[in-house]
Image 1 (cartoon, rainbow, N blue to C red):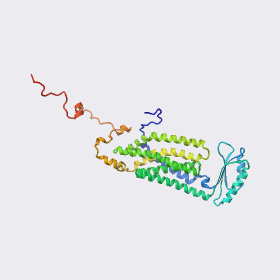
Image 2 (cartoon, rainbow, N blue to C red):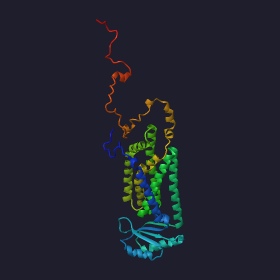
Image 3 (cartoon, helix red, strand yellow):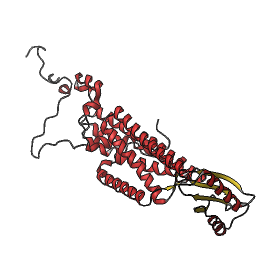
Image 4 (cartoon, one colour):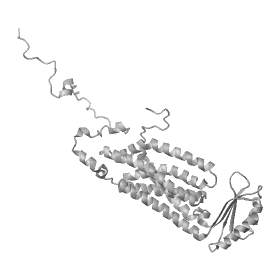
Amino acid sequence: MRPLINIVPVDTSIDFMKRRIQALILSGILMVAAVVSLGVQQLNFGIDFAGGILVEARMPGEPDMADLRDRLNGLGLGAVSLTHIGEDARDVMIRVQQPDDTTEEQENAALNAIQGVLGDGVDYRRVELVGPKVGGELIEAGIWAVSLSILAIVVYIWFRFEWQFAVGAMVALIHDVLITLGLFSVLRLEFDLTTVAALLTLAGYSINDTVVVYDRVREKLRRYKKLALVDLLNLALNRTLSRTILTSVTTLMAVLSLLFLGGDVLRNFSAALAFGIVIGTYSTIYVAVPILVYFDLRREAIVGEEEAAAEGETDASAPDETGAGAAEGLPTAAPETAPAGAPAAPPASPAQGRGGGAKARGGKKKGRGKRR
């Protein structure tokens, strides 16, 4: 039964591999730009990693931001950041980054001083005190979490498929995470623990999309053993394109709703996921799969023991690879024609088509009556 609404065509024949070199160059440029941005201006670490004091509060009335900022700076606590948050003009966020040698008693005293400046009738929505040492430990833990997750995914792909697939998946994951971090650095978005959770979620989502395409590649490798690898990869991508686009779009719609309606707490998490879904979809098509072209895939290993045992069967049971391109939407070569001036071959009789050697029914009959 055909669907009522066909949003994405199923039987596409897009030549993705035609632009693989340009796509890989673009990905390389983006990764280098991300590394440069991370090295020059670094990430805008949140209070979780940088340490200090974070206060989110709703004031009794709309505050005078310039006056409030001057009074907070007059406390001499360190670098003070005062911004509006949310749609209500009464909501403010105060961030104070303190020196590395700040003690817990000094942090509590600084918090009391901030509360004294804000005055009475303030609704405190969020108050956090994080020491610099704890922030450094959280940075290290976040790096380990992302690195180990990528390593575990690569090992799984290696055992599940082949090492060539594992290399492609690893490059795609590093590509996704690195460019997402670069966007956070360029746009000066706050990088906190929720962003680390988003990166881990992104790694799982991206590899799920890649595994679906890789599984289709392996299926086509088993079926068409003589088909050119570039054509085979195009075939696998076109057969999974509808699923890839629909999954990415529906997931992105949910993430965008969190980004615009989830408030400040979920903003960094949803922003990282939104960037990652778009980048991950691109990397599945133009990074993870094209990399396979530059490795010598061991087709005999992909075929496996079951296919090796089936080689003893007749050729009639094997799929016809000469018609595989037309059946799967790939371009096929035109049939050969006789040279100009050559006599045309006589058409085969129906009897020859069936029996290959039987005499035509219209021939002379023997033993039927005497000649008069």
